[in-house]
Length: 317
Image 1 (cartoon, rainbow, N blue to C red):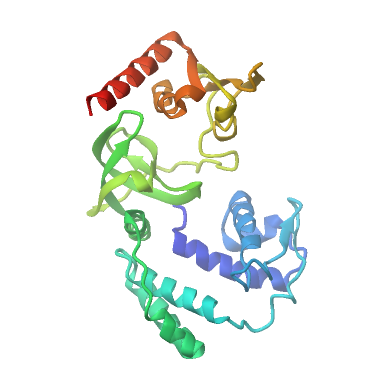
Image 2: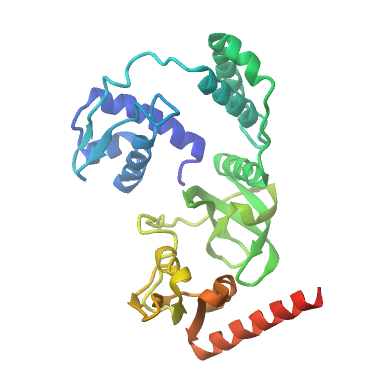
């Protein structure tokens, strides 16, 4: 089972020390040392260059790889003792106190965070006083994340009420969580007991969540490679053709597609594949006058019907 978010954070902190002591380490050796796949290691290495000793974007870790070896180009630049400015100390303290209140956080992790917060308060001096006058509350996704993270750690099943935009309905289901990951939004990959298949759930669409007493036992599955994005259409999926105007060219950037042909007005004719063509009705409504579904004909008709119903509802108001 994949590590949860807290375990991944611990691993990445250890990875920094490991790489500092082993310049030019081989990717295969490092992955083996940490008990992860090479793809998981590369994913961690994609995150590390966004970390460093300054919230302002300076002094970041200059780490890269050629696929065989890993190079850290500025270990000495970030090795100096950390000196926090007042605004940085305030941001850290406010964030730490907020995270400590998350439901579902393991008590050992909460205790460790509170101890670290106390040490930071002592070191921050006057800045700590300013942070005490600020507070942060998380949106519902934060609570859902904590519950999923806890369920993964304790290997327990979850009950969720989930909104499906493709069907525009809420469903209730029990799932065995497998891992959390982020691709634009934060997702849970899980084995769904309702459909008896692997499913992906976007956390901000979880309306309600509850940890169950049942032991989670997802089948042994090979984790999906997400390096090419979350949506990876199959050649067997139905083909859909969408035409967009200049204001809808963004569709080609956000939706994997087979081809995008230029149109005389500056728009695009986009051919893509999806296992659920009906889900593109919402795209058509979002585009409005900037786009339309051309094929298949039945999907184009249903999109027009949905648009007409939406307009009628507005006229009624």
